[in-house]
Image: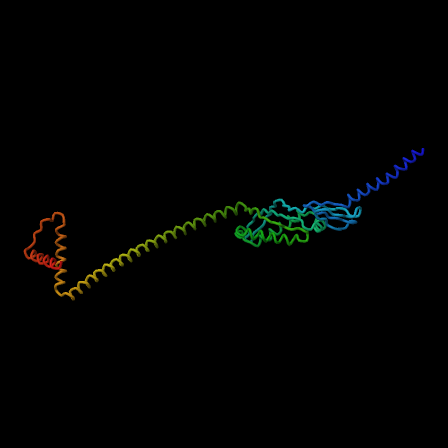
Amino acid sequence: MNIEAWLIEALQSNLVYLLLAALFIVLVFKSVKIVSQSEKHVVERFGRLHSVLGPGINLIVPFLDKIAHRISILERQLPTASQDAITRDNVLVQVDTSVFYRITEPEKTVYRIRDVDNAISTTVAGIVRAEIGKMDLDEVQANRARLIETIKASVEDAVDDWGIEVTRAEILDVNLDEATRAAMMQQLNAERARRAQVTEAEGSKRAVELAADAELYASEQTAKARRIEADAEAYATQVVAQAIADHGIEAAQYQVALKQVESLNALGSGDGKQTIVLPAAALEAFGDAFQLLKGRG
Protein backbone atom coordinates (compact mmCIF):
# COMPACT_ATOMS: atom_id res chain seq x y z
CA MET A 1 0.00 0.00 0.00
CA ASN A 2 2.82 2.38 0.71
CA ILE A 3 4.26 1.70 -2.74
CA GLU A 4 0.92 2.37 -4.39
CA ALA A 5 0.51 5.61 -2.45
CA TRP A 6 3.97 6.67 -3.41
CA LEU A 7 3.32 5.98 -7.07
CA ILE A 8 0.07 7.91 -6.94
CA GLU A 9 1.76 10.84 -5.23
CA ALA A 10 4.64 10.81 -7.75
CA LEU A 11 2.22 10.67 -10.64
CA GLN A 12 0.23 13.57 -9.25
CA SER A 13 3.34 15.71 -8.81
CA ASN A 14 4.60 14.89 -12.32
CA LEU A 15 1.18 15.64 -13.74
CA VAL A 16 1.43 19.12 -12.33
CA TYR A 17 4.73 19.63 -14.12
CA LEU A 18 3.30 18.20 -17.30
CA LEU A 19 0.33 20.53 -17.09
CA LEU A 20 2.63 23.46 -16.44
CA ALA A 21 4.80 22.50 -19.40
CA ALA A 22 1.75 22.12 -21.62
CA LEU A 23 0.45 25.50 -20.45
CA PHE A 24 3.82 27.10 -21.21
CA ILE A 25 3.81 25.63 -24.71
CA VAL A 26 0.30 26.87 -25.30
CA LEU A 27 1.24 30.35 -24.05
CA VAL A 28 4.26 30.44 -26.34
CA PHE A 29 2.18 29.26 -29.28
CA LYS A 30 -0.49 31.86 -28.55
CA SER A 31 1.90 34.76 -27.96
CA VAL A 32 4.38 34.25 -30.81
CA LYS A 33 3.04 34.98 -34.27
CA ILE A 34 5.04 34.65 -37.48
CA VAL A 35 3.77 36.78 -40.34
CA SER A 36 4.86 36.11 -43.93
CA GLN A 37 6.35 38.78 -46.15
CA SER A 38 3.21 39.07 -48.27
CA GLU A 39 0.78 39.67 -45.38
CA LYS A 40 -0.16 41.92 -42.50
CA HIS A 41 -2.25 40.80 -39.52
CA VAL A 42 -4.76 42.98 -37.71
CA VAL A 43 -4.86 42.34 -33.94
CA GLU A 44 -7.94 43.04 -31.82
CA ARG A 45 -8.11 43.24 -28.03
CA PHE A 46 -11.55 42.94 -26.50
CA GLY A 47 -13.08 43.52 -29.93
CA ARG A 48 -11.19 46.73 -30.69
CA LEU A 49 -8.26 47.41 -32.97
CA HIS A 50 -5.04 47.01 -31.03
CA SER A 51 -2.18 46.73 -33.52
CA VAL A 52 -1.06 45.60 -36.98
CA LEU A 53 1.59 42.90 -37.21
CA GLY A 54 4.15 43.21 -40.00
CA PRO A 55 6.27 40.48 -41.60
CA GLY A 56 8.50 38.50 -39.22
CA ILE A 57 8.18 37.36 -35.60
CA ASN A 58 5.64 39.24 -33.47
CA LEU A 59 4.46 38.90 -29.83
CA ILE A 60 0.91 39.35 -28.56
CA VAL A 61 -0.78 38.84 -25.23
CA PRO A 62 -2.35 35.38 -25.14
CA PHE A 63 -6.11 35.13 -24.54
CA LEU A 64 -6.41 38.93 -24.66
CA ASP A 65 -5.26 39.58 -28.21
CA LYS A 66 -6.40 37.71 -31.28
CA ILE A 67 -5.62 37.83 -34.99
CA ALA A 68 -8.87 39.17 -36.41
CA HIS A 69 -7.84 39.69 -40.04
CA ARG A 70 -5.06 38.34 -42.25
CA ILE A 71 -4.63 40.78 -45.13
CA SER A 72 -2.54 40.13 -48.23
CA ILE A 73 -0.49 43.16 -49.27
CA LEU A 74 0.30 41.81 -52.74
CA GLU A 75 -0.79 43.85 -55.75
CA ARG A 76 -4.23 42.89 -56.97
CA GLN A 77 -5.96 43.27 -60.32
CA LEU A 78 -9.65 43.92 -60.56
CA PRO A 79 -11.56 41.99 -63.24
CA THR A 80 -11.91 43.88 -66.52
CA ALA A 81 -14.98 46.10 -66.28
CA SER A 82 -17.02 47.58 -69.14
CA GLN A 83 -19.14 50.67 -68.70
CA ASP A 84 -21.04 52.91 -71.09
CA ALA A 85 -20.16 56.60 -71.31
CA ILE A 86 -21.27 59.53 -73.45
CA THR A 87 -18.71 61.94 -74.83
CA ARG A 88 -19.13 65.71 -74.97
CA ASP A 89 -20.22 65.45 -78.63
CA ASN A 90 -22.96 62.94 -77.67
CA VAL A 91 -21.31 59.73 -78.87
CA LEU A 92 -22.04 56.55 -76.90
CA VAL A 93 -18.88 54.54 -76.20
CA GLN A 94 -18.18 51.40 -74.21
CA VAL A 95 -14.97 51.60 -72.21
CA ASP A 96 -13.10 48.55 -70.91
CA THR A 97 -10.98 49.35 -67.87
CA SER A 98 -8.70 47.48 -65.50
CA VAL A 99 -7.30 48.69 -62.17
CA PHE A 100 -4.36 47.40 -60.12
CA TYR A 101 -4.09 48.20 -56.42
CA ARG A 102 -2.61 47.02 -53.14
CA ILE A 103 -3.55 47.45 -49.51
CA THR A 104 -1.09 49.58 -47.57
CA GLU A 105 -3.04 50.21 -44.33
CA PRO A 106 -5.09 47.13 -43.46
CA GLU A 107 -6.58 48.75 -40.36
CA LYS A 108 -8.40 51.23 -42.62
CA THR A 109 -9.44 48.66 -45.19
CA VAL A 110 -11.07 46.19 -42.81
CA TYR A 111 -12.90 48.77 -40.68
CA ARG A 112 -14.01 51.31 -43.29
CA ILE A 113 -15.14 49.30 -46.30
CA ARG A 114 -16.78 45.92 -46.60
CA ASP A 115 -16.25 44.90 -50.26
CA VAL A 116 -13.09 46.55 -51.50
CA ASP A 117 -13.15 45.22 -55.07
CA ASN A 118 -16.75 46.19 -55.68
CA ALA A 119 -16.22 49.63 -54.14
CA ILE A 120 -13.20 50.35 -56.35
CA SER A 121 -15.03 49.11 -59.47
CA THR A 122 -17.98 51.39 -58.76
CA THR A 123 -15.67 54.34 -58.15
CA VAL A 124 -13.73 53.73 -61.38
CA ALA A 125 -16.96 53.49 -63.40
CA GLY A 126 -18.20 56.83 -62.11
CA ILE A 127 -14.88 58.56 -62.70
CA VAL A 128 -14.57 57.16 -66.24
CA ARG A 129 -18.04 58.40 -67.18
CA ALA A 130 -17.34 61.83 -65.71
CA GLU A 131 -13.98 62.25 -67.45
CA ILE A 132 -15.15 61.01 -70.85
CA GLY A 133 -18.15 63.34 -70.62
CA LYS A 134 -15.67 66.25 -70.63
CA MET A 135 -14.03 65.19 -73.91
CA ASP A 136 -14.98 64.81 -77.56
CA LEU A 137 -14.62 61.41 -79.20
CA ASP A 138 -11.48 62.47 -81.08
CA GLU A 139 -9.89 63.61 -77.82
CA VAL A 140 -10.71 60.29 -76.15
CA GLN A 141 -8.94 58.43 -78.94
CA ALA A 142 -5.97 60.78 -79.20
CA ASN A 143 -5.36 61.52 -75.50
CA ARG A 144 -5.79 58.09 -73.99
CA ALA A 145 -2.58 58.34 -71.95
CA ARG A 146 -3.66 61.63 -70.37
CA LEU A 147 -7.12 60.21 -69.70
CA ILE A 148 -5.57 57.20 -67.92
CA GLU A 149 -3.46 59.46 -65.71
CA THR A 150 -6.50 61.56 -64.83
CA ILE A 151 -8.56 58.48 -63.94
CA LYS A 152 -5.73 57.05 -61.84
CA ALA A 153 -5.29 60.30 -59.88
CA SER A 154 -9.06 60.61 -59.30
CA VAL A 155 -9.33 57.01 -58.09
CA GLU A 156 -6.39 57.49 -55.73
CA ASP A 157 -8.07 60.50 -54.15
CA ALA A 158 -11.36 58.61 -53.80
CA VAL A 159 -9.90 55.51 -52.11
CA ASP A 160 -7.34 57.27 -49.93
CA ASP A 161 -9.48 56.77 -46.80
CA TRP A 162 -9.59 53.02 -47.42
CA GLY A 163 -5.85 52.47 -46.97
CA ILE A 164 -5.41 51.50 -50.63
CA GLU A 165 -2.77 52.50 -53.16
CA VAL A 166 -3.80 52.43 -56.82
CA THR A 167 -0.68 51.30 -58.67
CA ARG A 168 -2.00 51.36 -62.22
CA ALA A 169 -5.15 52.06 -64.21
CA GLU A 170 -5.60 50.97 -67.81
CA ILE A 171 -8.13 51.70 -70.55
CA LEU A 172 -8.04 48.48 -72.54
CA ASP A 173 -10.43 49.45 -75.32
CA VAL A 174 -12.95 52.08 -76.42
CA ASN A 175 -15.74 50.50 -78.47
CA LEU A 176 -18.30 52.31 -80.63
CA ASP A 177 -21.73 51.24 -81.81
CA GLU A 178 -22.13 50.13 -85.45
CA ALA A 179 -23.79 53.36 -86.66
CA THR A 180 -21.04 55.55 -85.23
CA ARG A 181 -18.37 53.20 -86.55
CA ALA A 182 -19.85 53.34 -90.08
CA ALA A 183 -20.06 57.15 -89.98
CA MET A 184 -16.46 57.40 -88.82
CA MET A 185 -15.36 55.04 -91.61
CA GLN A 186 -17.04 57.24 -94.21
CA GLN A 187 -15.37 60.29 -92.73
CA LEU A 188 -12.03 58.50 -92.76
CA ASN A 189 -12.41 57.52 -96.42
CA ALA A 190 -13.36 61.08 -97.35
CA GLU A 191 -10.32 62.41 -95.51
CA ARG A 192 -8.06 59.94 -97.29
CA ALA A 193 -9.47 60.98 -100.68
CA ARG A 194 -8.95 64.63 -99.82
CA ARG A 195 -5.35 64.02 -98.79
CA ALA A 196 -4.71 62.11 -102.01
CA GLN A 197 -6.04 65.02 -104.07
CA VAL A 198 -3.94 67.48 -102.11
CA THR A 199 -0.85 65.33 -102.58
CA GLU A 200 -1.49 65.04 -106.33
CA ALA A 201 -2.02 68.79 -106.66
CA GLU A 202 1.16 69.50 -104.72
CA GLY A 203 3.05 67.08 -106.96
CA SER A 204 1.78 68.80 -110.11
CA LYS A 205 2.68 72.18 -108.67
CA ARG A 206 6.16 70.98 -107.81
CA ALA A 207 6.64 69.55 -111.31
CA VAL A 208 5.70 72.91 -112.86
CA GLU A 209 8.08 74.70 -110.50
CA LEU A 210 10.92 72.34 -111.38
CA ALA A 211 10.26 72.75 -115.13
CA ALA A 212 10.27 76.53 -114.72
CA ASP A 213 13.50 76.35 -112.74
CA ALA A 214 15.06 74.20 -115.48
CA GLU A 215 14.07 76.66 -118.21
CA LEU A 216 15.36 79.56 -116.14
CA TYR A 217 18.65 77.73 -115.56
CA ALA A 218 19.00 76.97 -119.28
CA SER A 219 18.30 80.61 -120.16
CA GLU A 220 20.84 81.79 -117.63
CA GLN A 221 23.49 79.41 -119.02
CA THR A 222 22.75 80.48 -122.61
CA ALA A 223 22.99 84.12 -121.64
CA LYS A 224 26.22 83.43 -119.79
CA ALA A 225 27.69 81.64 -122.84
CA ARG A 226 26.69 84.52 -125.12
CA ARG A 227 28.20 86.97 -122.71
CA ILE A 228 31.46 85.01 -122.67
CA GLU A 229 31.46 84.83 -126.50
CA ALA A 230 30.80 88.55 -126.73
CA ASP A 231 33.60 89.23 -124.27
CA ALA A 232 35.94 87.04 -126.38
CA GLU A 233 35.02 88.88 -129.58
CA ALA A 234 35.42 92.20 -127.86
CA TYR A 235 38.82 91.12 -126.59
CA ALA A 236 39.87 89.97 -130.08
CA THR A 237 38.71 93.27 -131.56
CA GLN A 238 40.59 95.11 -128.88
CA VAL A 239 43.76 93.11 -129.66
CA VAL A 240 43.43 93.87 -133.37
CA ALA A 241 42.80 97.52 -132.66
CA GLN A 242 45.80 97.66 -130.39
CA ALA A 243 47.95 95.94 -133.05
CA ILE A 244 46.81 98.44 -135.68
CA ALA A 245 47.53 101.24 -133.28
CA ASP A 246 51.02 99.84 -132.61
CA HIS A 247 52.01 98.68 -136.13
CA GLY A 248 49.79 100.64 -138.46
CA ILE A 249 48.32 99.33 -141.68
CA GLU A 250 50.70 96.38 -141.78
CA ALA A 251 48.91 94.69 -138.88
CA ALA A 252 45.54 95.19 -140.57
CA GLN A 253 46.83 93.70 -143.80
CA TYR A 254 48.20 90.73 -141.85
CA GLN A 255 44.79 90.04 -140.30
CA VAL A 256 43.08 90.27 -143.69
CA ALA A 257 45.62 87.92 -145.22
CA LEU A 258 45.13 85.44 -142.37
CA LYS A 259 41.37 85.46 -142.92
CA GLN A 260 41.86 84.92 -146.68
CA VAL A 261 44.09 81.90 -146.12
CA GLU A 262 41.67 80.41 -143.61
CA SER A 263 38.81 80.87 -146.10
CA LEU A 264 40.84 79.22 -148.87
CA ASN A 265 41.67 76.26 -146.64
CA ALA A 266 38.01 75.81 -145.68
CA LEU A 267 36.96 76.02 -149.32
CA GLY A 268 39.51 73.46 -150.39
CA SER A 269 38.77 70.95 -147.63
CA GLY A 270 35.12 70.44 -148.67
CA ASP A 271 33.99 67.22 -150.45
CA GLY A 272 33.94 67.46 -154.26
CA LYS A 273 35.75 70.81 -154.26
CA GLN A 274 39.37 69.82 -154.77
CA THR A 275 39.52 71.83 -158.06
CA ILE A 276 38.91 75.53 -157.53
CA VAL A 277 38.69 78.14 -160.27
CA LEU A 278 39.47 81.68 -159.16
CA PRO A 279 39.83 84.97 -161.02
CA ALA A 280 43.29 86.28 -161.66
CA ALA A 281 42.74 89.21 -159.32
CA ALA A 282 41.85 86.82 -156.55
CA LEU A 283 44.98 84.79 -157.20
CA GLU A 284 47.10 87.93 -156.96
CA ALA A 285 45.38 88.84 -153.69
CA PHE A 286 46.03 85.41 -152.23
CA GLY A 287 49.62 85.56 -153.46
CA ASP A 288 50.11 88.84 -151.67
CA ALA A 289 48.52 87.29 -148.59
CA PHE A 290 50.92 84.34 -148.65
CA GLN A 291 53.87 86.67 -149.10
CA LEU A 292 52.69 88.79 -146.21
CA LEU A 293 52.23 85.75 -143.96
CA LYS A 294 55.63 84.39 -144.98
CA GLY A 295 57.22 87.71 -144.19
CA ARG A 296 55.47 87.80 -140.76
CA GLY A 297 56.58 84.28 -140.05
